[in-house]
Image 1: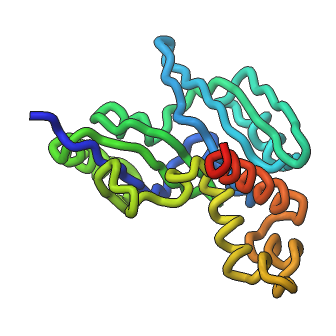
Image 2 (image 1 turned 90 degrees about the vertical axis):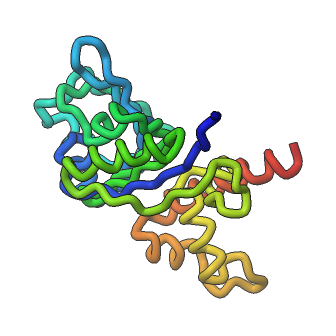
Length: 211
């Protein structure tokens, strides 16, 4: 019998991995799933607002090697090796297929999938043995009406947050009830960072709507 694929979202607190620690400077870090190498090091690839505090914190972390930063506008992308395993590796070892990781103020959110409820049980048992891992949401893959907007329209969680907040505050009204600075302040980011998230999110939406 073919098992059902389930989309799951975890909230994580207390993880002492380098990305969780670095996000304590007040910057949101959006990461690809880390790739654990045969030598025990994890390859990390992630993006964040271009912030010197974050770059300095990462550079000074003795657990990180070969840190590389590339800047594009107000964003920076990073690649490095980490000698310190992340909590997500514990879940992956039980069958969790990680798709995206987001860190902020030392906390994290993991989104991914498991194949079947038996695998989910194993993942949850392992989660119970680690620091502060809580299942936030689970639903069948393919239940389009239940899928988060970010996944349905190929947005990052931060792009979805920017668009939702802008819509809620009346940024898209004519005339506007809030300007870019207002929305950026609500999100806790700079105006230019908000506008970049908005443009990238709109580009992703329009590409799928109009081809």
